[in-house]
Image (tube, rainbow, N blue to C red; front, side, top):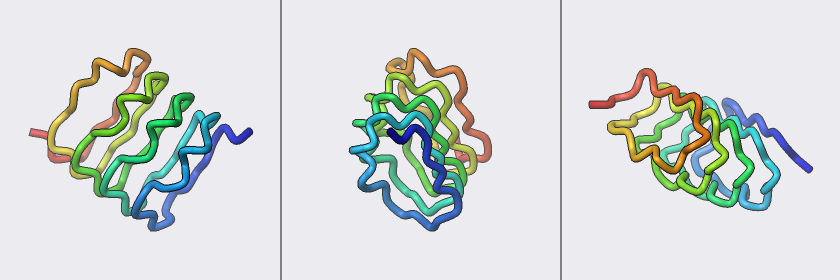
Length: 101
């Protein structure tokens, strides 16, 4: 049962084929080419998600990740912060070096 994946610096453009990894707790996608957060909604056990140094402009499609404790989106293209109400377990949100207004 896989609990953690580190896919740093792999030129990944899209998130695919992750929905079967339902026991995953940590997903590290730091420094890739991801433009959109999608296909993660079935990862209900995910507690740590690092999408720093990508090309993401909108924080979306993660409302089902209710167990998420740490979300890293440093150095992306995020312009505004979404409603964080669903993230009752979130203890850390890193948004440095974005374009938030």
